[in-house]
Amino acid sequence: MSSTDVTEAGSAQEIQRIATTPDWYEPYKISQAIKAGGLIHVSGQAGIDEQGRTVSDDFLAQGRQAFANVERVLAEAGSSLADVVKVGIFVTDMAADLAHVITLREEFLSEPYPADTLLEVSSLAQPEWRIEVEVTALAR
Image (cartoon, rainbow, N blue to C red; front, side, top):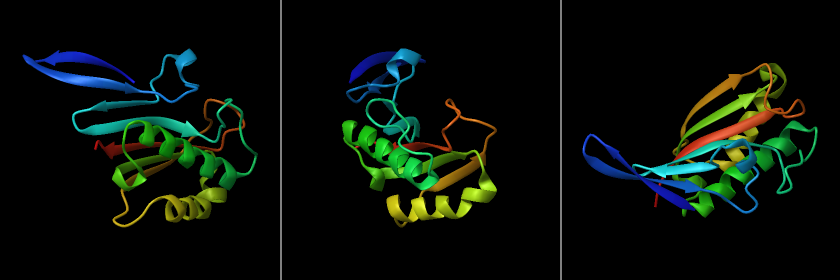
């Protein structure tokens, strides 16, 4: 983790970069997460393993890995999925995968379920990716 002090309107606020090892986002100049203002903002996580390889063509396998990656980044920041207050889920085929998204929500999230935005997109960063998950969580 690294941190930077940012001064806004005369008050100092710490912005802390969160990274796991390996950090597969570093080459793209993206932080895996940022901790600031009592919140952790986790960048979109896809269904890739620690070597950056897509785990499967299967939507649920990719989704489970994406949520596991979110969980891993949150743990590095001292938080967990129980602290998530907002989820953004991006899928490439809403009609085919909406029921699977609900399954993933049930597996990884709990009451009270976080606020959620679900969007269909034409593509993600890699052509084989079918889902990407980003979250905002409370910092502990």
